[in-house]
Length: 302
Image (cartoon, helix red, strand yellow):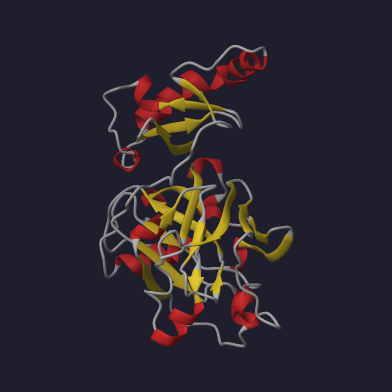
């Protein structure tokens, strides 16, 4: 399943993508469901029942729209919908540095002996298609394509064997990075937490739709038409189950928490010469089996 949040009126609404064009409003199908998508993640049985009922009719619904019949609830047109982030204000975003072999190689760095963790403020999240806003004084802002894990079942002290049952699904993420802040502070939090610096989406793809632990998936990042990053999740140094186990030794993982698993080689700062995002650019992160996440770049005038 592809679970999503979309904006209906002024409020976020949880939904499903039944096809490339047909969306389904979950609360219109079952009003007793929680209004917040991440509250559904620990137990998706009700959502799966709804999916099984409505998915077979998606092609029929799309065909009716092509004949000029307007969408009516519980269905909506994904092409017209404003998608939001799959999780809204998670308790935490845990990011992993230097976790692709090719990213370590481009820096001439030894492989880490254990995961290098840092935090991104949840307020950095940005929806698909909405702008990455460069701070007025920021001139060295970079983009990083990443596979993100969304936790479904809470837990602490999770073993690698137990890890898959704690995963609700996966999504695309762009770890936008203010390199000047990152390097001058000598730690990552400010440089990785700028407002709008965490584009995420377009939806959460459940684990049954992907290979185990999202392994073997192509991952790319384009700046406009230029391919900047191209790799595969098999190149992760620490795979998803090892990350969940390692992180949960220290902190309890809660439903909706996001683990963003690191970026491949090809980022702007390590190119010769370095390149950074400019107003007018568009950044697109694509992960095989999940989808594409695109965001334009603008300058914020404070």
